[in-house]
Image (tube, rainbow, N blue to C red; front, side):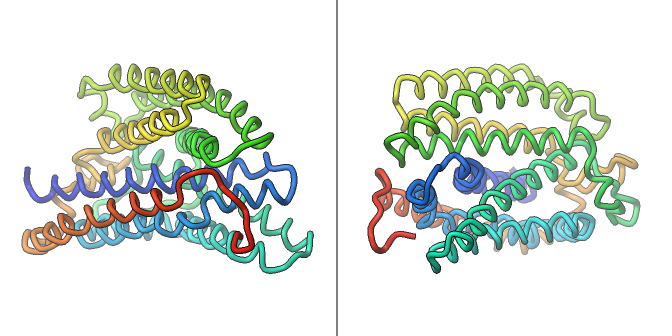
Length: 338
């Protein structure tokens, strides 16, 4: 494996870690309206409050690694997607603020504002992640000078909007699986009932997106057509959805969460597998696409960073595992709760 491919795999691993861990955080925010009183809303918030900031470390590491390993891609994508990324940053800020500020004042108006902010920011972030992924698969207008020239509304095509809907449904389903481990009583039963509907909606959208991917003209879609994985992806998606549904129906909530995590990993795998070796496939001319070789840093930089990654990734994984072990079990509210 060359250094460029190694770093593509590292980026995929970081993206997968973020999608699995912060995916259920966003899912909890999407399911927030299911809570019917202040106590239930506090239970939902306290299910993720000790964990969300550690989960976002994976996103920070992904951005930093992309900047260091593939600076040309970082420059092109972050400049071309400037408005969506600013909106995403605003959503992530408002989500954090909602959790930190909601309990600072007992006013009903104050708490209602931050409750709505948590839902809206979780919805916005989920949609933006999916729209960004859909645009990368469908191809972005990278020109011969490695500039990405497009307006904000140019990014809102039918396929990116569909992937935005898929990502939102995926995170909501994943969050429901997580919450069934953390809640009890009437709230638990409402989330349990909603989870089955979310699974069916996800499966329908997942298969639709796979079919639509094959109709795209960009190199990402051509890669997928050339590799005999489409049927496998579809079959695995159906099996994992069935596994999650059966585990949930039997009340095996830990197994259901493990299956939903594998579904998230499958979606990230489809995304990364369809792109490789491109990172920003050009919709104008495939020769102008930014791939892992024509946009990477020097071999010396990649080599030094590889040592850091091999040391840092196990530490990040161990930290995440430790935090989830410490805060396992049902949410119990006390005077220190949010």
